[in-house]
Image 1 (cartoon, rainbow over the protein chains, first blue to last red):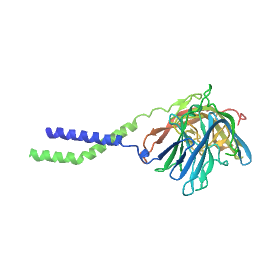
Image 2 (image 1 turned 60 degrees about the vertical axis):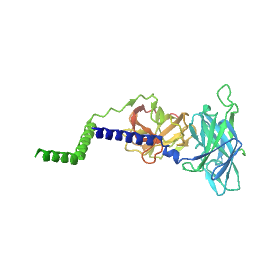
Image 3 (image 1 turned 45 degrees about the horizontal axis):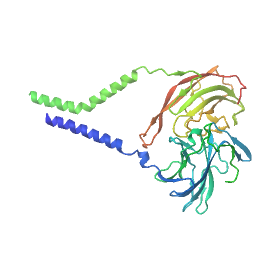
Image 4 (image 1 turned 90 degrees about the horizontal axis):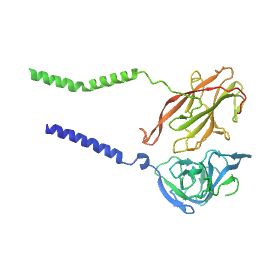
Length: 192
Length: 193
């Protein structure tokens, strides 16, 4: 009788132990995920293969760009967020696929694909010793503008590489809920 | 004598446990499979349909020729255009909407997958941003001489979220299955596009 009970107890303990180990270990996607390198606006952030320095952020209602000799005007249901930054490769040619605008609640907005293959659109190819100014263009709802984080990595899907995480900080908002500095049209053809 | 019989019985049961379990499972699966399937849901044409990743609001259904949303249509074909409002409910930009809406019977097996265009500026299948509704046009092509009924049915598909999938252990949307169907009246030619 005692032997039977002890067997049952042993089984229950083993199940509990296995379950505990399964639930307490970090998520596999997290274990093999990107390694953050944190910083703020104006700081040079050294990722494994590139360095990044965010200069400024702008918001606009429409975008204007020249694609293959045709003027394109891109409207949006939200806002365009334009992050101007300087990118440089560290010791070998590399590229940056784009970036992610992570809103205050963790929603992830990838660089807009609506720009197509216009000049200056991502992916950005980088050479060591030749820093390059680029624009990351995002399409976001107005409530995601403040307290966002910019995430930049070399490849869109990668593991165990570094990811630059730049806190973009607070954004002054007007009475209409829009960022204070929002402009009507942002011309992407103007020099950075 | 009874002792040996008991031992034999025990041996039989031990050896046959796996077989008994297999027969039981197969029987149960067969019984559950034979149960009547729940009827597929029909959505009202003006309803906002909630799938795992999307809020889908059908707006209008019409037929186009020659050029629709900047895309050429072959001379011997016509385009069936379904305009919907898509809202990304997930936490990430995504373009996982190619099979969210499919033509249902009797057109289900006769067409290729649709072309999907952002009506705002005719961008081909861009990623949609979380919480930003966009008007999208699903464009199927059919032979020009094929007659169309007064209204068409569409299957709306949904997927389920898995925090870790069985193969890679990564989060994602899997197991696509129909959420229901929706029928829309075909509008007369010449409207919009």
